[in-house]
Length: 80
Image (cartoon, helix red, strand yellow):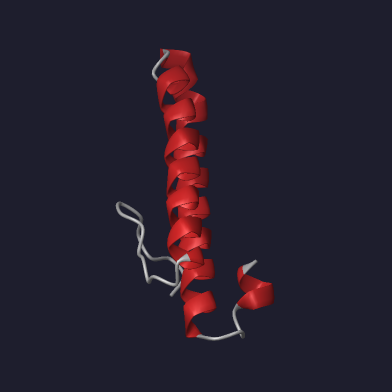
């Protein structure tokens, strides 16, 4: 989405970048959770990461639909 819609203005670019940042951090957490499944901790962190990403995407979509600027919490900005 970021590559397709980044040229449609600063608002769309910011929200697409936020979505990509959430997806990147979720992917990192899922990759870390997979080997942790051997210690049984990963069975907890894996679904928590998915729920966390889902909630952030829903909140971001609602904010974008309302025309509000929003930066998701606890996500580093890999893409600006």
